[in-house]
Length: 505
Image (tube, rainbow, N blue to C red):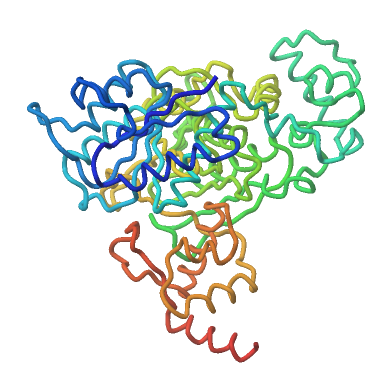
């Protein structure tokens, strides 16, 4: 069986890209086995109108693959372009929709095209691309994910893999006993409290008959989890203002199992926000009322989600960043296909990226199984009068919990500033010298990333931010940081470093 893919956009803007993408899918060894791409130009001659033909393909193909750029295209008598008609037809017929948008500044797009993109973003998660190589990469990743979700490709989740070579001796017996006690007493787990550690691990599929333990077991009960998974640490930082800039009053890198990481990160936040304690009512109780500016449950839920549902194959780490006006929690992960940030705001199914990890965290009382975490975060914040939290799915997940607006604060911006979190670890000197020498002329971020051989975008953003805040690099377009033509050049400080590195060579 082959899935039919209708590659959209009958506009001339993408005529070359559509043909090359069609050829790419047909010639790739894996994709060609499962997918049959179709473009309008290759449909046979017929008496039907062009509109009837492309709408039929959009509605009947298994996958609608849309390419959106800056042009809206030809408009029919109702002022609607073929591209929007196709998208609506695929939506009406419940087809899988994969949308790829050329990276451009919004002002470069036709107003109707921008509105179409906004409509798409309210329904599904779309991807952006810069050039053909980037488009091929994005399409390949999306189609492989499609095959995984339809079980044509079976790949174990990261937490279920048993490829570290670690055995049960790497686990902390006390942590396992504590887990059993809590699960039995508070979650009513139907297992005897004196069950052996090995039997418990096998019960939760955390160890096989050969004694090999799953990655989840190390993250849950390991003596030193970061010995095997260094990026599993959590980095916490506080800034005085609303942007990433020195000085930093607090900076910590926490290590340990997932439960310890959550507790340490939550303590970091709650110990640095305002707490009000009222006078006790002597007639009723000696207990004074205590109020915190951020709800503990919402902060904990957001951090738990980041630790539990992150992509542990990434070199990035969970980052908890406390600004003057907000708390941001970042994690290297993506939403399951079909979920969008907007759908997180309403009832939705629980689709854990790390199912074994999520199962154990449920029994320990850290998460629920109903997919209500984001709704709980919103409700907790709104109950005490805070602005509604925000959820962003970019190259990584980002949750924003707003702090109360104080009298001396400027008005809270309506849109979350899209800043990259500060690099908490120092950039290696070798990497710094490579970038400084390479940027003897202005370079784009993609050029620098390719030069370093980095594939993890989140990690690269950290490196780039470090060099910007250290005033070694500066943007060529400081007032348009997200411009697709943005480049980075050496500052005067960077030029001195370049000369020094060249002399050392």
